[in-house]
Amino acid sequence: MTSTEPPRSTPQRQAVLEALGAVDDFRSAQQVHEILATAGSGVGLATVYRTLALYAEHGLVDTLRREDGEAIYRRCSETHHHHLVCRSCGATVEVEGPAVERWTSAIASEHGFSDLAHTLEIVGTCAACAG
Amino acid sequence: MTSTEPPRSTPQRQAVLEALGAVDDFRSAQQVHEILATAGSGVGLATVYRTLALYAEHGLVDTLRREDGEAIYRRCSETHHHHLVCRSCGATVEVEGPAVERWTSAIASEHGFSDLAHTLEIVGTCAACAG
DNA sequence: CTTTGTGCAAAGCCTTTGCAATTTT
DNA sequence: AAAATTGCAAAGGCTTTGCACAAAG
Image 1 (cartoon, rainbow over the protein chains, first blue to last red):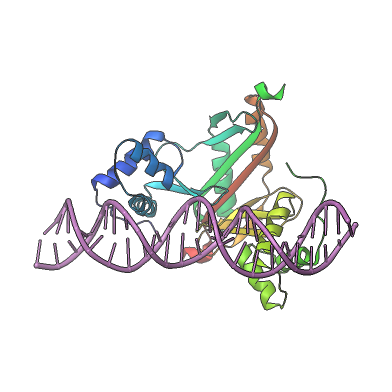
Image 2: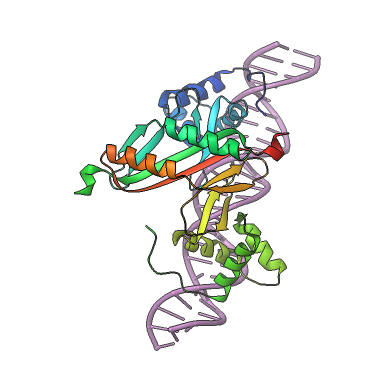
């Protein structure tokens, strides 16, 4: 479904993509809008939504849903990693998981699935909070 | 965070759980409500939402988010498993992942984390929809 | 000049919440 | 009688859409 041609670039779209790239993490449309507003850019919220949807369609950003249903986006190109987060203090560690990548690919193709994406989140209690 | 005691049973809650169990697949709160309405049961929409949230908290139903952000629920077995979801038709396959369990444990303890929980969701395009 | 993109505000949808009535213990 | 649950409707929050204006080709 990924289109071939990249979307035309405009100042607003560029701003959205840059803001998202700068944080190098998942952010909601509203968060991106706020980042831009704080930075003095007057990009409208609707434009942020339209831009993110557009880029998601073209595969330039990854999209995901948080538990509360809000859509979050990340500029996709950097290496894929997962998060290990402490449920007590919120500390997070980024971890890479080639094993997981391989396993998901294997399982999925075993069931005839293609064009994969996956989310893995690990929550636990960190050493500092366990005491 | 799963509570110890199961929720008290009421006719409405039982109806919700039965409707969900009957389809043996993921359904949104609104869909469950419609199923009940069609079946002549006058359970309110708010009650359906409350019931599903309650059971999700107690681990009796699995919850997920569709791409459009709607929450979907499914009556769930006790064993821990992951889901392979088709982004096009919504078909789901339950998969077990001892490899993932092991990997998460290893990574977490390596970083000093304990008392773990994790979520893994794989989305892709199933064979039927790939054509 | 025609086409595409943007802003703003209104509308849509899913979900949650306040509150009185009802049911259960 | 006290506590928990339900239903209805209103409110909330995220997202999309209609439309006029601005920008781009």
